[in-house]
Length: 529
Image 1 (cartoon, rainbow, N blue to C red):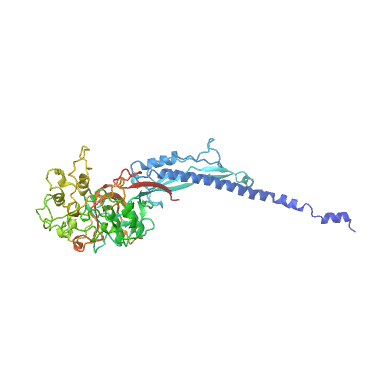
Image 2: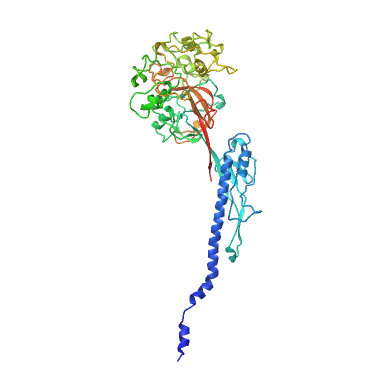
């Protein structure tokens, strides 16, 4: 018979777990060590990535396409980086994450420059360096517990980030024109432009472009941006913006508010315009008249029989004559009750069939004029004619905008002195130079100046689905109101024709002080990856 104590010993399982734990302790420590050290490695990689992101964003702020952009961007990325890593080994006692500076505009080294966000085309100059890629110097994470399985450190870890600069122009009316085939350089001061037109043969391209999307892309939002003194929407992106198609008549009513003409009715958002939301320009000489002594209601301030209307005897030019000069009048019968600054003569089909580019084709569809406007008729109507007392001899070559400034005593000579104006525009026959309908207080911005985008890729646009590429912003002068005139519809005038005159390239500053109108530029760096 087996001894009972021996039997109990054999059957006793106490201590078996401790044995198994001792046998598995090595594996448990290895697993715990890997988890702990992986977390440290991941944490250090996050620290490195944050540093790379900050360096790339700092560098991107300098990518303005101006001389020295790459050098400034690389210096900003390398020198403004202040990130530290607390999980990597010390290098000479320093915790700082560093970047090896490289200022050349190329895609080599640890600071690289690219022309595109996909990093397929290396930059070759400051002008085409649109993106910066920054790779931070590698760091090593020493393992604490993992060495038990033979691994002592993470090896060199690094991180990279790519960033670019997104630019936007804020508080501008969202008008666009397409670049002429001869390039941006052919857009010159004084040139007249038919900015919008949807009559047959006169559209910029598929979709009748003329406006850029703002807000939600609705017509109501676009009308606010065109008419309101305070534009209530986000800035218009210099890149990545889209054209607005299917433009409604409300948009042209919005343009007219800048010339003291307001729509009648309760349709939002223009129903509050006259009371202050949409102040008119201070100087509103135009080719429509208002015979009410003091227009006092919406009906008397609208376009129509009870408000603003074209005069009986309006400017209507004869066919072009070889003897025509800037000193000769062009009106067909010499009778003009009132006239505005007027579009370019070549934009009147009665003058030369609408042939503005000299190709001999009387298409009536040329969008860019030649800057020749009927100065002699205008000065004869209001100032006694060119060469009269009080009219400077230089007036024979003035643009409409220069004439506009002169009449307000704002035109300066080469020495900075005011060119003495001729005085108030006569108000006979219903012409009104001042504000008679607008109840809003005028601000510092000239409401007859518009900052207009010139789009360079119109030939690739198809409806509103393709983003526009804006080559430049120009200050342009609003020449005349949009009037639905059945008589002159065949003479280059309809209810969707906006005529402008080029003033200058918009000097878009960070506070708007550089531009003649409301342009404010904002540049924001952004991470690509």
